[in-house]
Length: 246
Image (cartoon, rainbow, N blue to C red):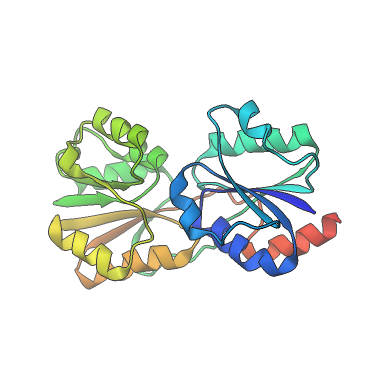
C-alpha cells in the first residue's frame, strides 16, 4: 500500500516514526535536507526524496499508484496545501490534511490572524524573537518592529534573502536547525534580551511547550499564532482512515 507523505511539520515526522509497524510503503518528500536526519533510515518500506522546483518534477518521483497523499506540510502554508490537493487528484489518491493537536499553554496571547498579532507586537516593548515559518514571518515583521526583531529560521539561502528584504540585519537572523530544547530557547532569550517570543501551534506540541517553558521561566511574553484551518485528520485518526480507504 503506497502512501505519499509531504513531511514539512514535526507532526508528519512523528506519524512516520509511529507508522513503521503498520507495514505501509511510504514515499516521503521533504522540502530541505534538514528533515532527513529526523526520520528513520531508509529501507524497502521507506523512501525519502527532496522536492523538486516544479510540481511536475516532483510528481515524476511518485509511485505508479498510491492510496493516499498525506499533507504534513507547514500548517500555515495554504498555497502549498492547494498544490498537494491537486497532485492527489491527478494521481487518483485520497488527499489527507494532517492537523496539529490544539494544546496552547495557559497564560499566553493567542491570535488567529497575523494582522492582529502584528499590531500586538508593534505595541509591545523590547526585543522580539519570532520562531514561526516564513509565511508568518512576512506577515508579522513591519517597519515598526524590524529594528528589535530577531527571527529563527531554517538555514536556507532563500529564507535569509527574504528576511533581509524585510529590513532585518544579518545579526538578527538565527539560521539554525531544530529541534530546540528548553535550555537552548532559554539561552537565546538571554543572549538577545528577548521580552516577547512568537511561535505557532506546532504539529508536535512538545516544541511549543519547550518554548513556552523557556519564555515563562524568564518572564517573557509568549505570542501564539493559531491555525483555524481544521479540515483534516489528527495524528491518531490517520491509521483508521487509511484502513477505511482499503
